[in-house]
Image 1 (cartoon, rainbow, N blue to C red):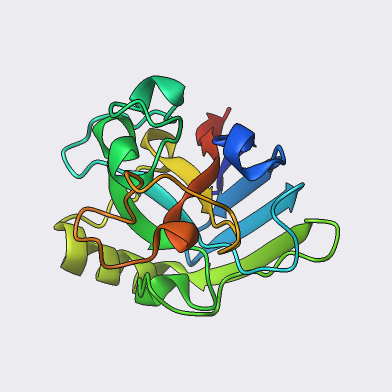
Image 2: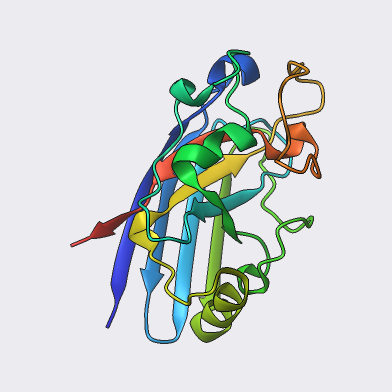
Length: 187
């Protein structure tokens, strides 16, 4: 059985980064693989962009963050502020999504026009096994997830109140959400 999912990815934090990143994501799940295609336009140029799906482990339906999630009113929705509506970072769209190694340097790099296209064929059994190890279930529940694109250049001035993540483990420029989309099942 083949299941298809899509997401229309819309800008987030565009006022502070000066561009309006947008694009699409398509996910095709077959018996043995998850095929992922993400194409983005107008992202910050010539830099690596982390991208992941986020969600909740309790079955709650994740929603895209909006400026309403700017709870500290600094004009920026940072990664910690997305968690209330979008959940936690789950699967990276990097060189090896099935390894679920979030912090690495194998994410897509935008060109001098701010465009990138990511295409990956992921072994489904490996991804589900690692997902179960980390989150206690092997159900990816794609239609309950959102996709985030992250990353702005170090030169972008961010308020001191912007966080990288709850543990402040990652630089806020790397993790700043720049675009988000709700993943939906294609009937």
